[in-house]
Amino acid sequence: IIYTCSLSAAAELSNLKEPQVYLPGGHLNNNSLSISGPSGIEELSHVNFDIAFIGVTGYTDAAGFNSASEADTALKRAVISRSAKVVALMDASKIGVVTTYTICDLDQVDAVVTAGKLPEDFIQACKRRNIEML
Image (cartoon, rainbow, N blue to C red; front, top):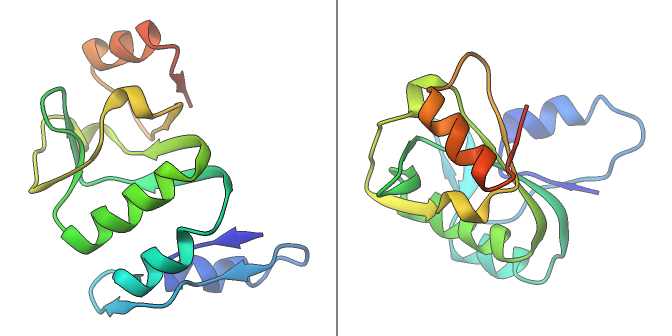
């Protein structure tokens, strides 16, 4: 079972034979083609997730993983609170970026999936916390 707030991801996943793909209700962001809002948070607050993949806008030590959208941040926080494992999705361009809302701190993440080389201080901070780097 896969829940996604992304219409693009749902369309791609619909090509697979086995998974059941669910989209929570809510407001459609026309720019990102993603869904967010209170109704989606309510719906997802009753789901137990094995793994949550969380896209982020930025990361700093002080602000943690962050996003510019209050609605997206609230939904991601709700999913994180119900997840056995949390995976942050980011590339090196996100390091040093601070936007308005903190999604979570580094200590709340179990793994980081990245394309490209992240700064050595970030890699070392992940190693100290036993965060898997992929």
